[in-house]
Image (cartoon, rainbow, N blue to C red; front, side, top):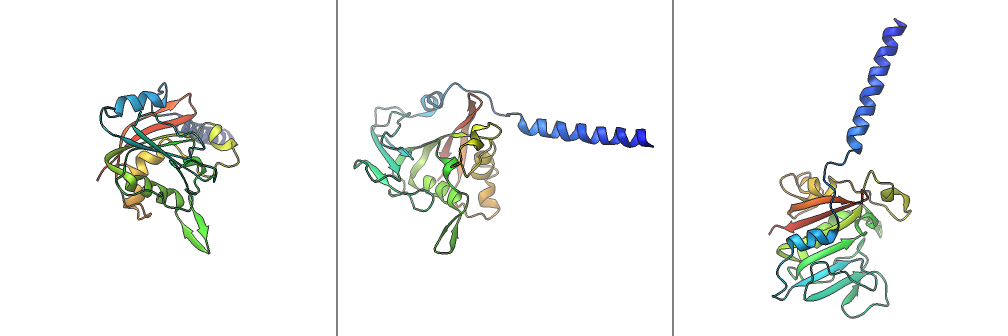
Length: 212
């Protein structure tokens, strides 16, 4: 009986290890860089295009080579094309359907899933995704680069409060699942995932199209 019990325990332990191994495997392929996706899906630069870089600091990035570039950061010493906003609590301070592109480099992991203001809770991450969809034109593109599970870089920074997996944006904000909308989490928009991959095994990089 002891031998049978030990074999059963060993089998259960093996199944647990296999399950953990499956969770750690990356399902999306490796890609060279975010520029690779920007070049693949960006529009021709012949027309007038606009792009917004979230959490840009003093130097907004422009991987889509838009003609007009804006940024958002929470600092106060910024130029006229970079507006001040706290993305965990504030709306994006631009008009709806204004941008062809929106980018976020090492930003989403800093946005809390829930924030509080005067005793009122706010689903900050979901509201940010609503705002990104709002300011994009129909078929506008959102490119993000985010350190993600299971990479240790997703956890080690003490300011990372929103751990992303490779399934977070495709499953919760993109068709056909769009679980953040279907489950009543407060997401009221629709994205389509155009492509996603891993850069250096650390960053999940994806391009989403705003469906309107």
